[in-house]
Length: 217
Image (cartoon, rainbow, N blue to C red; front, side, top):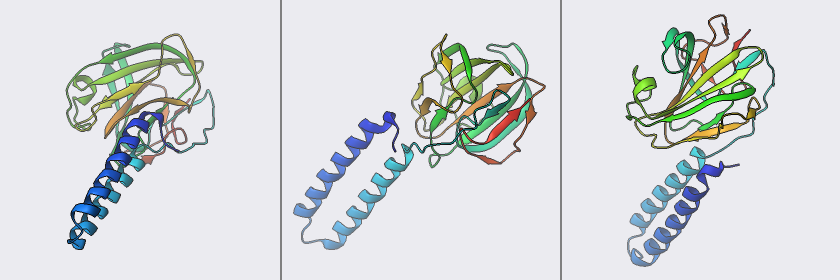
């Protein structure tokens, strides 16, 4: 299954690949070795595009008592920080970095009411840069949950990510594990949790979106 955000790009990629294949066949008929190289490169390119927009089904254990990973990737930050945009107080930050090879679907880490959803234009620093959370292009979303209260997650563009898609609309109810958006070509998501949250992951751990539990109460 492929994500709807990739349909146009996938279609364009396939059409382009077919055109180049036909041109290669007719124009390079006397250079079979070059034809072979071009075909291999085309296949590799198509596979990369298809795998980037894959949207595998996930089995979420829906619960008010825990927060699941919003994305696939590696945990790169676990620390107590001051969150200046919405809470303006200290929170536990857990950040997950996605490489271009990871699934890039963003999923809701918990169920609840969307209280805040804001897009911020910005820079394109590498996603693991300490200032990426405040200076890069990003969206900030706050969900009010019965158990955790308000939790903020932030989609952050990286050096390659040039488009963030956010489906969270203020005033709507959302369900843990369902589709919340998409970030194209390498990025990061920050979670800002209450200080009394029990963190269930460790640094450099690889997590799977909508399935692995990040924190519980």
